[in-house]
Length: 118
Image 1 (cartoon, rainbow, N blue to C red):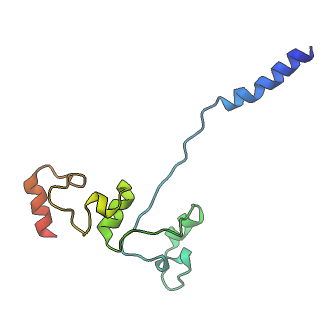
Image 2: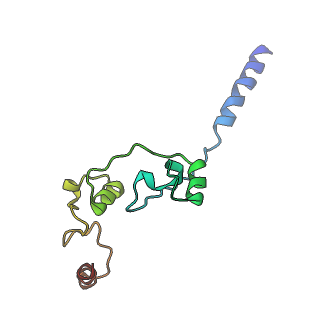
Image 3: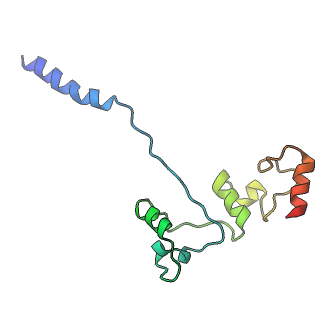
């Protein structure tokens, strides 16, 4: 009887553990040309950002991040690819010609045309 009770009670934990875990909802918000001081939730008293403040209050904030460069595109490329600028070839705000990792245009002509307008 004790053996049956032990087996029955011991199996209860395994049944609960067999349920698949729900994946968390992760949304990463990346904004351009702001510093950490530009938002109310980071202590700014002059700029009102109530919606972002509310979202930040309900979220996990990463307040100690570093980027390998002060230029926008190489920093964003590092976040998207996990590669340093010297590895991705993105050193300036425009990718080098022929870098297909960031070229999502339908043709080379469209790609060159978009670069000349920037």
